[in-house]
Image 1 (spheres, one colour):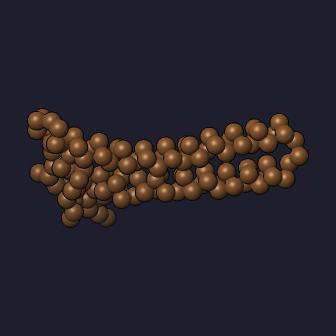
Image 2: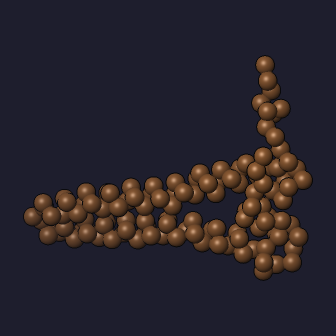
Image 3: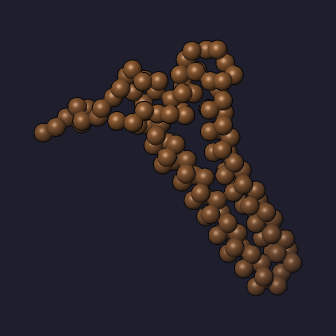
Length: 115
């Protein structure tokens, strides 16, 4: 039986100190899901709320639903741009500092080595 630790190739000499695969999963897997799927889900929920507001005859309920729609749209925009800001900050850290560790982290974030 193969030991799982033997199957994982780790390059401790890289800028990521062996976390290349984790950085790639975050940048190419987790962030796109957060940036695309969550805002789409929030927009779909807004569509349902808008449908309920149109069908409802209660003005008080309509104001509550429209308030919820606006909040969800703002949340969708914030989540979408949050990922962009995190990528921008991690990419710029290396260029605005002279700390060698932070420069290596920025290089790791921008170009994690592939096996």
